Length: 246
Image (cartoon, rainbow, N blue to C red):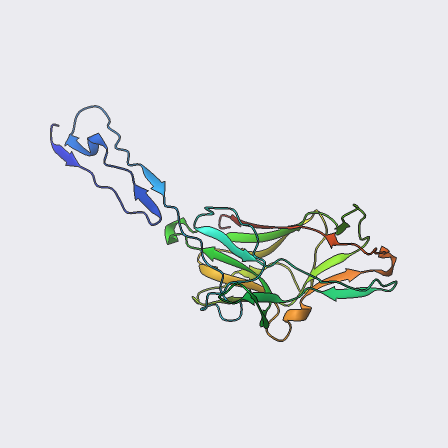
């Protein structure tokens, strides 16, 4: 007893030490002593959107979504908002395709010659000892509904040509749904699953490539839907969550 002791804090990526406790060093006594170091999580800059066809390049996509602030080390960085444009009313079965993702010029104007696949961008910047996998899911919250609250009966949203891309390399997450993926309002669908070191860094989950960008997000409208001359909308909830290894 009465021997000296001294403790030292450890470095934790993404966290800042708040201070050294008073009993970080001292002398051993008969009673138990607990030395507690307090850390706070750093506020990280968000990961900027990258080109879904060339993930090494940062881009400024048109019509970005509103994302939660301070998502942390596991984040959704971007998600395309699907726009099917204006269509003529039809009494037959019809399939409409979402417009590709467009990019903005440096002056904020739309670059009409630059089109990309619609995509979701995910980043996992957690340190290796904190990495326990993740999953990406989507829910179509409601049927397609007009401004007068009339539904587009039987309309179905389909996500096709699912592809993954990254600039970092490493092991890819695994697809959980086959092509094409049809969404059902109110049903949560798990799209991607990463385990262990899979999905580390920034990943692009895109629908199509340069050739198929304009035909990879589809809206099927049956002939009995009876559409009106109105604006129909729905919302999608993209959910990225950490999941433990099996």
